Picture 1 (spheres, rainbow, N blue to C red):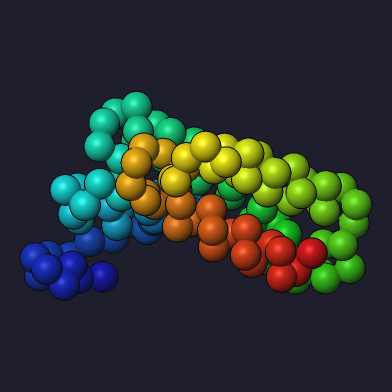
Picture 2 (picture 1 turned 60 degrees about the vertical axis):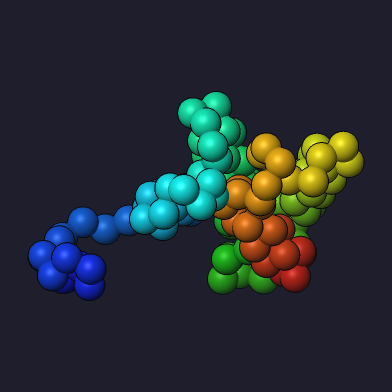
Length: 116
């Protein structure tokens, strides 16, 4: 593939929510979407990784019957409760401004909730 900005050829593939988010945020680091400090960045990645590991199967599974199993439903409920609890005293998951964590967690929660 050719990089649209530099015209140079590149052959790497970005996979996984946190890797995609990190790659997009690196284009404009001043946006603060990956946080404004190293601690923020670690927390953003932590939220994304946790959401991915808990919710991705439910959000994107092909087998609707399996998604409805109590084990998966309880994981979605537990994660949703942890987000709700965290946000009861804050506006955003990390820091004072929205980050990639807020966006990706919202996408995965919404997708999982529609399926569950």
